[in-house]
Length: 416
Picture (cartoon, one colour):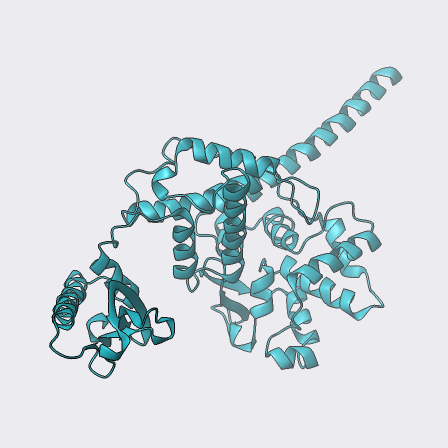
């Protein structure tokens, strides 16, 4: 409990900085081993300071006045501590010091909010999501220093104009590691993360109004890329002489037939394999991104891959179903695989999840409600984008059929 935290107060002087044999007097607040020093704006002759008792020696008027002031400070600091305990707020050396100095109502800054959010969410957000927040934090700092010519701003300074300027900065910024500007949806993702943090500040009453009320994000709906059945089969049938490419191919194919994301595949172990309601083997795990539980019947090709890597020396070391490989390397090797297989698409590991949703399940008549469950989506609306992809593919195929039929029809007319 917070009220059981260790709290102490002492007074001391900095003897190393004596000037004309006089030293400054400080108060030291200690809570759970963490200290906060307060300059009391008082001086004392070094020889007249009692370090053991933490007060001035003797009965001189100067000593009596100083000791009386130290008693007043002591009483006020203890009152500050008691007030914080009654308010049931977080107590630390700095919060007691702030209450004593009357600074605990100080206005919060934007970067203080960002730091607070990232610290508080470090346990509830996945590493990948948290890493994205750190990237947004980096761009906020760049915007402040380059465009606002400042290190920080108060939350009260967040206005609609601030948001518009930040969006404009993101759209025009050229990262140093490459020369490509951010796409629209990437910019909106950074804005979205800032919005979540500002909403947190609003709920915590750190700001009086939400600057995002009038701000409308504009997302561009991008087509989800996936592999057609023939493209998927080309990769399945391709054998590589290089072991790392075969491993990457197998991991990709496994994801195509389970719908699991990169991190969820890497985390799989024997405990995630269980007997399902149909008596067959199922994968039962929690998605790291959303923590939603997914239960996936293991299709034959996925089962073969699990057996293939059973007992693999690298998998045994990590106690996982498959040898671990970084997402960066995996996607780099997938580019090699795409080149060898003659694929024009930009092959990424996440495309396997899209392929599972479209080519493997929806295209083969699996109901969208079932696909949504297999993907671990919280809302079926998230899954419906894949259904739209399938509808568009049907439309394209029918368009080609119509064209062929029209050619045949015109040919028949010529013959007749």
